[in-house]
Length: 315
Image (cartoon, rainbow, N blue to C red; front, side, top):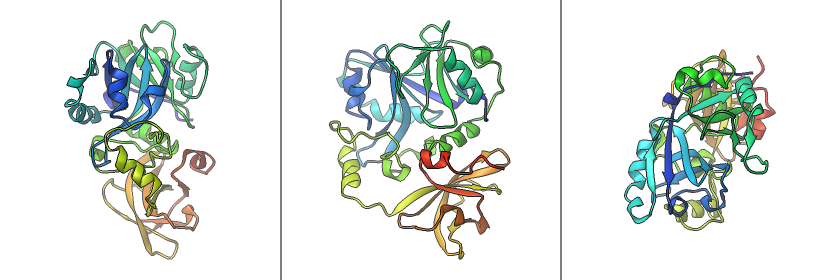
């Protein structure tokens, strides 16, 4: 099993606090902030007025403060987009304030950390855990498999392995590979303003609430969901060959006819994960596809449940 810790240099955290924090975020984010209780978390995104995603994150509510946890480099873009709205609300928005840091835990170290923690509210899939001895810290056990967790901790970087049981350091690319295997697009600063939530499967993976009130871009996002017919879909492939992100390499069917393009790649042991975009009406098995003319090892729709049951971890 993959088991490692990645440090705070891989993440950004924006903390929103104050009397109007909930109301402010409810009018800007795709997730339903008003339904989020203290001690809970949810996936979410923020869109511009054209319905394009500015940022994607895990939103945590802890003691009426909101923590937006995302890939390093995305937070500055988010803060810049929201800065013009916040003067109308009694709340503050801070980028990585205080003495806490965000770590990513995977595999056995995530299991070890969560085993010693306790929940403040009744259990559930989106309940925060609180590790002993870490004042104001929390653990967010992310959905899906392989097991991953976010740890907002007062421990400095050199002591981060204390709760993680001394495991090895990992890389941002490894962390993003595990996100792909759980059916989540690893949104980075290069993606900001480029995609609709539907492009990244956010409307089906828990980032968008379609029963909340208005938010920036909501009309366009809802129209695409209810009235639009998707022309493309995402699939995840495992290959033996490394490919460069942004190369726009061809994804072909078994006969060699081009049917899609490569969006990004991430390492998985001695092989590679390839996220590709293909036509929505493609009906052949995904493992029949060719990436840059070479057969793939495995293929799956970009859905965490499907990925978990497919041979992505086999040799």
